Length: 231
Image (tube, rainbow, N blue to C red; front, side):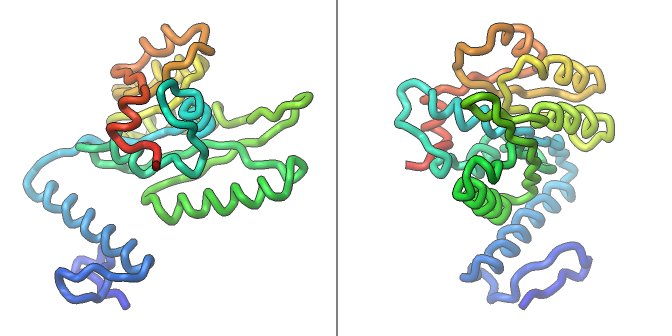
């Protein structure tokens, strides 16, 4: 089904030149091979693309999109994570995207538990270089809160900088507890681009925003211009 390049570095579908494959599996390798060829062309022309890694606090993004003013009500299935990642990584060499969420508890409901498994599996199939990391969902009174997600994001952010995995970190988060992690990354010689939403529930966000090299406040206009939500 697939033929291997002479260099032995990537695979592509064995289809006629100029004809796109029809199956989802073939399409996956077809577009991957096209992307790798473009990257090789850039490398051969001595064009250096800064390495970027994207770190997403998924629950923050989901709730913020639901609360965004002048935007139609949004649900989880309407969010186009692929467009979101492509938007912020355009012009860079995307190394990996980390998607942080909390694993649904079986005690909360088997339907929610199974739905999350299916949804996350679909994300992995649709988005290249996506790593999903899950914390815990703990019940406190009548509500459920996620635990361990912020710690995982902060540790991965700093350790990836220590290991020189990226030049630029793109972070989607709204918790001021990340302030020191962002500053630590900068102290390691990396750059930080922070993306937040217009929410008023962060009492100490000024220091948090100032800790990034570049800050973008996402509003309804940006969401619509970049097709971050499916109609």
